[in-house]
Length: 368
Image (cartoon, rainbow, N blue to C red; front, side, top):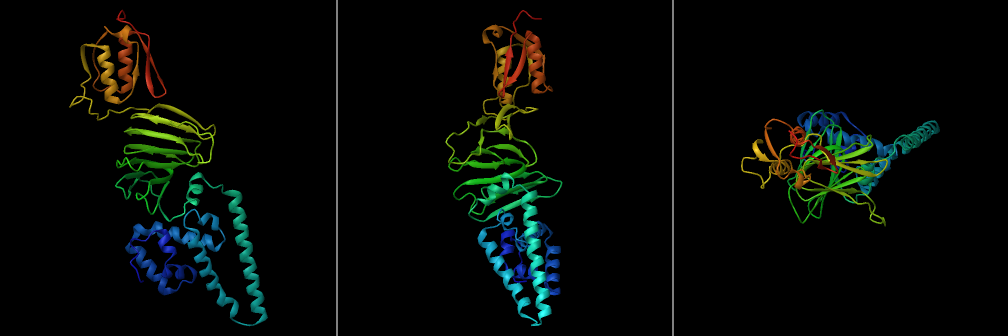
């Protein structure tokens, strides 16, 4: 083996003579060499196997599928290699019987390729993820998590991605040079390195998530009819992934910490809301050690302000009606919604969550 292949990605394998020759005409020596190499570097099994499957797809005529993974130029080079590999079979043995048999084999191969191509088109509708990759004009790297554990991926710009099982993430080879764009199928949590000059874009099904530097989660499986974006810190913009030629662009949504949006893929509508369990945030506006959530004759407006700062959730209420109300309660272990329930019960109010914010209805100081 001429290379150690430790740093090879899937496209690299497809342009390597030793790998391609082994796929088109394996020998005992090449088989032993590759088996030994895979045993020594098991972490490269995924890239190697994907390259094997792509060679098989190209041989069967599934070039449209292969183009979602590798450039057209690489496919054309492989097709030429395949034709050259098959050429000696047509020139050896001049017997008419042998030639007739070879023509039958060739015809069968063509029928098989056509049949599989028809089957592919009939049974496999390209996902948005595959369609997006097919438009890329440069090579890209793809990470596929086939394990049952979250896979940690370090991007070239020092951003970190936690890729969930059965998920795929791709980015172009020049990532970070001109832009920071990734493509996701499945679920991932992003901890993005801040860079105001180069926004970080996540294309996931029909939705684009745009950030400068923050932490958020995107869930966008092809089999599910919704896309979900949740924010843990910072600010996130989410909008439909529409063609640049579209004359009417839908408005997106802005998300803050502890907010999420669900995009319905059938109706193309956004639904903004709070996350199921809001968490405490680290904020420079909060006290150094954070609020204790222990209140003794504390004005209700002060309590609500502390909740707003601690969880990053806007709380709307009638300031005039609750201006002189006070709270006596210890809420150190209660969740965000439990805290709201206690405050509302104190003044006889109710609350609802609308568009990712809390709205307190009613209430007065006359309540016990």
